Image (cartoon, rainbow, N blue to C red; front, side, top):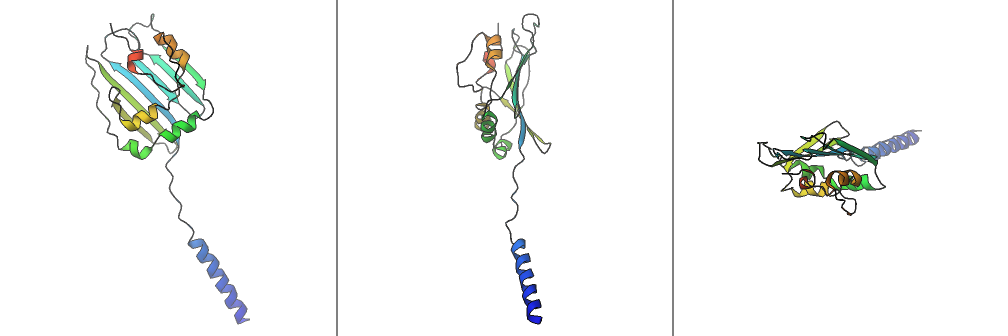
Length: 183
């Protein structure tokens, strides 16, 4: 009887020890639920759109052109389309949260008749946090450029605003000079 009890205790201890030594849970970075890119031209003084906003979520992309000083000639435009297979995964792979956290956010100043390109990338995470980086789109930091290259666009909206349609691979290659017209 003692041998049976001793064997049972040894089996229980071995089993408990095996569970206790299992690999510790690795902390995964929170998943990305939304990416927003805003190009703003402060103080351009010209006609055209002052703001371009692109929002990407797992199932769709929305592009907006707005804030024209001449709303009758340049009305606000908005277009939404579904993402193609793999576009969201490609964008997620391009986002390295640790590297982006190290990119310093810049200060943008808007003065009359001085072109100041204030651009922002915002990344919303599933845990409710948001990463927001302000940058000069004339000197885009490498980690932000990697994300921007993978942002899907809505070509017909861009064509309607600029009069040209890039026959690129569908990658967001829009720069402020494509949107903001100076006299």
